[in-house]
Structures are given as C-alpha cells and as structure tokens.
Image (cartoon, rainbow, N blue to C red; front, top):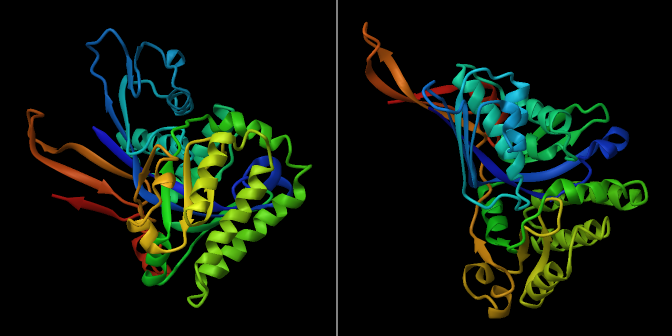
Length: 372
C-alpha cells in the first residue's frame, strides 16, 4: 500500500494572477505557504476477486468496473491520463474540510499522482508533480483553475512563486529568521466560516472580469513585493503586513460579486472590531476558510472578544511548514523463495525542505530515506 501526504496551503498575496487568462499576458507572482495540515491518499492494487475493479472511498464510496464510471473528477482524470489498467483501491482522508480555500483540490490531485507513480515504483520530482497536476486539472478535467495551488502543494514551504507569460515558473523560498517567522505565525489565525464552495464556479466570474479590473490586478501583483519587503525587514512592524492583507482583500472582493457575501462580510467586520488588523477569505472566495492577522500575539493566544469567536464555525492553530508532498510505502522489502515476505520495511521518499540553504537543497534534493 502506498500512502501520500500532501500539505494544504495559505495564499497571502497574488492570488488571481495565476489564472492562464492573466499570466499569459502579464505574468504572475504569488506569496504563499504550505501548513502543517494535510491531505492523505492511500492506494493499493485491488485483488481480482471482487465484483468491481475500482474502489474509491471519500465522503462516499464508489465501486465501479471502468474508470469512466468514477464520479470523483480528480480520480477519474488522473487515472484516465495515466492510463491505469490494473484495479485500484483509493482512500482519501484530510485534516481539514474539502472546498475550504486551502488548495485541497490540488493537494488531492498532486497526492494521487504521486501515489499512483509510487505504486509503479517511480519517484517523480516535485517539478514534474506540479506540472502533471496542472495539466490534469486544466487540460484533462478542464477546470477553471490557476496554477499556484499545484506548485505550492508539490514543493511545500513558504515560497515566492513567479510565472512567465509562457507558463514557465520559478519557486524561491522565503527565507526568514526563525524569530521573524514565529512572530508572523503568532499574529495569524485560521478560521472556518462553515461555508464550503467550489472554486471553479467562482473563478468563472472572476476570470470574466480580469480585463476590466486590470488596474487592480497589477496592484495585487505589486503587493507581493511589498509583503516580502515587510517580512524581510526585522524593524518593520508586522501590523503593516496585516494592513496590506486588508487592502488586498478589498481589491479581491471587488473582482466579482461572488467572491464574498453578507455572512462573510459580517465575520470580517466582527473580527476587525475585536482587534484584527486585516483578514481575507482564502482561495477563490465565496466562503470556506479565512486567514486574519491579529494586532498582538496575546489576542491570538486567549484574550479574544466573545463576539468574534461566535462569528465563525471553528478555528485552528497551524504553522507555516516546509514539508512537501511525500510518499510512505508500506510493503514487504524482501521475500523468500516461496514469495512470503521475510522482512517488512517502511520507506519514505521525501522532497528536500524548501527552506534549507541553496547548498543543502542541492545536496539533499530528491533524497530517499529508508526508515526501519
């Protein structure tokens, strides 16, 4: 059995510039981080003794004979594109709800591609995983999606992602002193609004307005550089980062009427009155999770306004995390002449941490570690 673990992501700035309709003319820049919350995909070959050839388990259970009969769009798209011929059983679990604005759909696609390749004994680089996931979502599934989520979840870490007009991208780790990163994390809070939505539906309305909102889009792109400058300057108050998030949300909210609603606006307004500096919906908008920057670590750790607490469904503490998508293989390592396993082992193929130094990344990239 193969188990992949792929992180969810939080996008701070630049979201929307990663739609092909925009970056093909203007390029793209995004500042985002993966967090210590994950999508887990397990894949194993299904023995030929069942009435079905494919079993897919998520919020529902599918037992089908043909890939074309699978209802889950990402599973169907990945298996069709990889031309899988053998029977498979696929299970999904997640630390946070689906359709929550945290790149969960792309984390699923990246993790499934990674797991299916691993089942065939293939190690796939993070660059290839990101590119394959982008192709599956945009060309096979024909979803109206950008490309920051696939890149973020495949690479992992706190990154500055840029995309050229030809679609070529680069990933540069946002290297910060530990004290500065801890301070940022202590001022951030992730909450769930209780509203789930399909990003592609909202993206349709946003993409249709990109030309009319070109000025705002360019401003949102410039905010990526401003945010990096704020974080890179130890003497700059992190309140400026929160204020920038608030400005970015105002611009994003104006891209389409579908990006926000009265319920979400009320949550944000309540948080501001309770002491938040800035806040935004994550992902395409419409609901799901919200990230907000608090005025002080004390507010985050306990001194909260009851009204603010009651305005959202739930909250969670999470950290910016360097872990990329990785594989855990649970299978026999050696077999005797009879084919009976004689020595079980656990393997972990890990991508090098994105926040390591350039020299150490070069030494450790693609390393495979055996754990006994």
